[in-house]
Length: 116
Length: 106
Image 1 (cartoon, one colour):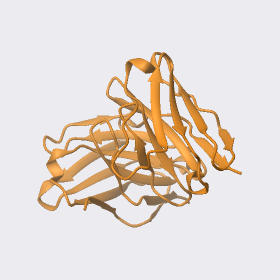
Image 2 (tube, chains in turn yellow, purple; image 1 turned 135 degrees about the horizontal axis):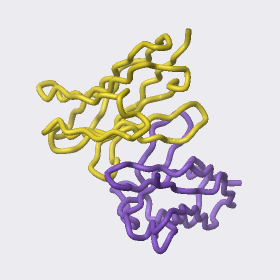
Image 3 (cartoon, one colour; image 1 turned 180 degrees about the horizontal axis):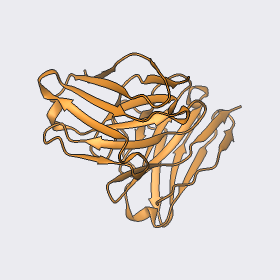
Image 4 (cartoon, each protein chain N blue to C red; image 1 turned 90 degrees about the horizontal axis):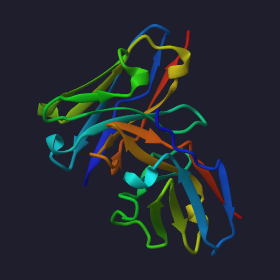
């Protein structure tokens, strides 16, 4: 069965960076895009960007351009999302989601807390 | 930037039909999909490409999309359907979510 398993919760100081991983299993990793979506507590879903695990091509929401980097390691079927220059407003649950146009499987989410 | 607008909340009695709307400029010209999210859980895809249901999603969930509005309809709503619902579409390779609608079954 398809599974996306994300890394554990993180606590970071303002100005630091965080790197969240998303390990895929149950399907061919390079056949589907990985998207990243975040959700602040009590708020809605916010799309951050996508990555093609086969080519490494990426596309980022304008809001995160220059601060986010999405990469992958195909040998271990794992995608990564790194967000830099963290501020308190980046405190949220970060999800990876499989899909090309449609997000059919989601990871369990990773809570990133930004606090001094 | 492209925006999708949903009502913050919708209430429905058990067994009745719930309709949740999602509005965006010429939304009918692009595919819409819908996600259900229960407290403390990851979102679940319930409708894609306007009207299609993924495997495992009950038949009481249906969707439509025309003009500027996409609609998620839940027929014979059950208590277990109480959740937040988000519409989503694409604009120039950018994903866009609606603000979400809290469905209350009472």
